[in-house]
Image (cartoon, rainbow, N blue to C red; front, side, top):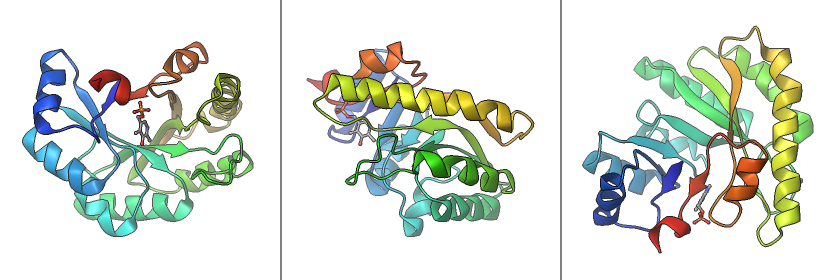
Length: 196
Ligand SMILES: *Cc1c(COP(=O)(O)O)cnc(C)c1O
C-alpha cells in the first residue's frame, strides 16, 4: 500500500509511519520534495502529472514514478536519470476506458510505447497504473480487469526485455481498493480513507 499523503501534514506522515507505513505518495513535485526531505528513510512515490521541468525534484530520488503517460515524459525521465547516473523505476499510466478527461496512454498505444522504452537505458518499466472512473463500482472493476488483461497479454512479448518487466499493477484508491485487489492489484494508492 502506498499512503497518499498529499492532503496531510508532516505530523500525520509521522503518525502513519509509527503505525508501520513505509511507502508514501505525493502528486506534486514541490510537496514531495519537502516531505521526502523531512522523512528520507521512507520510500516515496510520485503519482502526479509529469512536468518535464520538475523532474529534478524526484527522478533518482523516488522508489517509483506511477504516472508516465507519454513517450515524451518517458524520454525526459530517461534523460534526467542518465545525467545523474541512475536507473529510474516507473509505471506506465493507461487510460483503460478511454475517458476524455483522463491522462494515460490509450490501450492500443501501449505496446508501441513499451517497445520504445526497451531502447532507453536509464528507465525500468515495472508495470502499469490506472485511475478508475469515480462513483461506479462496475466501471471501476471493468477498468481494473482491463489493465490486468493488458498486462497479461503484453508480459510475454517483453519477457526478454530486461528493462520492461510488467509485474506491478498500481490500481485502486479509497473508494475502490477492494475491487482492485480482487482484480489483481499489486499496489493500492490510498489517501482519504487512511487519514479520516
Ligand atoms: C489522490 C490520489 C490517490 C488517493 O485517492 P483517495 O481517493 O484519497 O484514496 C490515488 N492516486 C492518485 C493518482 C491520486 O492523485
